[in-house]
Image 1 (cartoon, helix red, strand yellow):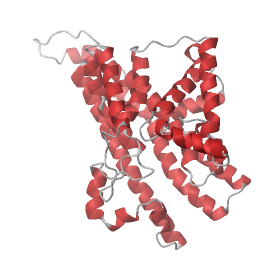
Image 2 (cartoon, rainbow, N blue to C red):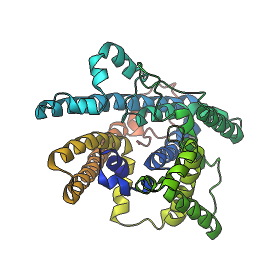
Image 3 (tube, rainbow, N blue to C red):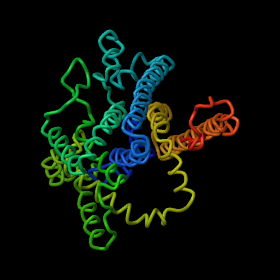
Length: 381
C-alpha cells in the first residue's frame, strides 16, 4: 500500500527507488497475489463450512462492496480535482491532467459507461480488475470439485487467451483502449496465491539451490527493468524493447510472472517458518495497513493526486519530497488504525447483540422445536 501510493504520486522522485522499479513485477503483483491468499482464507472457509451457495453469496457481497468503492473513489477524486482547479483558478488543468475532461463533457455517454465498467479511467483500473477476479472464485471452486488439474488448466487457458489478445475488455466508449489490467490474464497471479492457500499447490522447500536460482533471476532483471538506467544505455534499451511482449503489465506476461514468483519465493524463505523472522514495529505497521487494504488503497489513491498538487505548489526538492511522501504514508497508517478500530467496535456490538443465553431462547421456542445442538453465537469477522 505504501509503495502503490508513492508510485501513483505524479512525477515523484521517490518512486524511482521503490522495489518494483528494479524488476519486471511490481507492487501490483504483490497486491493481487496477497489478495488471492486472503480470498482463499476468507471465502474458502465459507465454502468448506457452509456450502457453495453461502460461499458464493459472501463473494457476491464482497464484489458489491468493491464495485461501490470503485464508483465512490472515482467521484471523490473527480470532485477533488474540480475543487483544486476552482481554488487555483486553473481552469480545468487538473481534471484534464487526469484525463477526465471527456467524461465531464459527455456524461450521457460516459456515466453509464462508468457504472457498467465499460469506461475505466486511468488510475482507477485496479479495483475493476479485482472485482472480476473475485467473481471468478465460484467458478474456480466448482472446478476444484473435479480436481485441481481442472483449475490449473482453466488458469493457463485464460491467461494464454488474454496474452493472445483474444479476450479484452473495453476501457472507454470513444476509442479502442482496453482495460489496463486484463483480469483474464491477472487471474494467474491471483489464483496462484489462492491455490497455495487452499493447498492445491505444495509449498516449495527452502534450500540454498532454489534461493540462488531465484536471486540470480531477480538480479538479472535489474539492468533490463530499472528505467533510469535503461533509458541511458542503448544496448539495455534495445534489449528491454525486444523483451517487452514478455514483460507487458496489462497481460501479466510470462517474464513478469516468473520474476514475481522468484521475488515471492525469496520473501517467503527470508521470512522464516510462519514468518518467524518478521518482527518489530515496522512489520506490525505493514501488517495493520495490509489488513485494511481496501480502505488504505482508496485513501492512497486520492492522496496521491492531492500530493501531486502539493508538490506543484511547494516545489520539488529533497525536503518537499520527504514531507509529502512521509505525510502520505502517515495518513495511510492513521486510516488503517481508524478502520480497524471501527471494525473492532462493530464486532463487539455484533457479539453482544447475538449473545443471548441459550436457556432464555429455549423457553420461548415452540414445544415441537428441535433442541439447540450448537451455540447461537457464531464468530464475527
